[in-house]
Length: 238
Image (cartoon, rainbow, N blue to C red; front, side):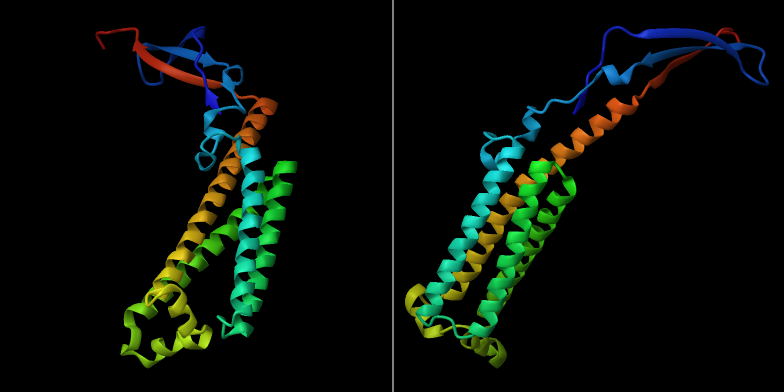
């Protein structure tokens, strides 16, 4: 939403006496009928997210990001299922409930985003933004914990025993090499980066809804700006 100035202005000059003075002051008042100068363009470049190369409007970009988010999580679920079947996962009682929980949270967020776009409800977009922010924070914290464990290594019995309680260390080393923990941490950070892209699209559409709502309020109620341009004393000798 932008405010465009107009060339034609309505001016009104009046003399108002000031208290405790012997001269009058001339107020040059410019009245700007603001509602006729405020425009809202739904096709503004500001509402085309850079995450989609500015090729899609924010409303369409949310649909695309929601589909990609669902596909992304399905791929993670398939990958975990394959790792579990090949006995790469040792703590199934930990990973399986966690994956189910994150799956439900993702579905709730995607559902809120889709309904929020369809009904243009900003509160539903905020639910999806909050969920994605929480997932991003969790993924980065978990990645930092993995790097911390790898950095300390065998110098601490606690950190050296944690990987073996969660996964099959020998199989992961055979598959990814001796630095498999770093690779897992990088993968988690890449997942967080992907979710940040999804979140950026949702935030862009949320901005679009806020600007549109603000414009509707101005259009319904109307506003008038009165600007004092200058004060000119009538007696220059005083």
